[in-house]
Length: 107
Image 1 (cartoon, one colour):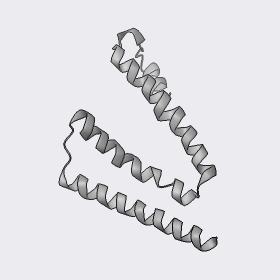
Image 2 (image 1 turned 90 degrees about the vertical axis):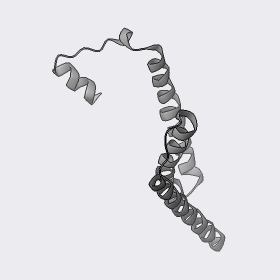
Image 3 (image 1 turned 60 degrees about the vertical axis):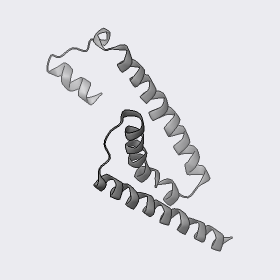
Image 4 (image 1 turned 90 degrees about the horizontal axis):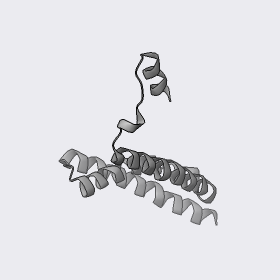
């Protein structure tokens, strides 16, 4: 909305009919799955799990995005990306395993 306001103030006009059909389908996908479904799952998870466990989604999302980019679009994955992904996955595994120990000790 902020970018649309800025563009309007500069005298630029949005022409929805000039956007290709694939762009509209991509937008619909992002609205439905990237916003509605993801937010619903996040709110449910907040009720079902601890906040420290739920917060790990923010670290896993980029790893999943890189994987999907490689799988679907054949994007290159460099050594530094592999190392970064491994660090993220290891850190999330540590958080998840420590959560299990804490919940087992509390029970």
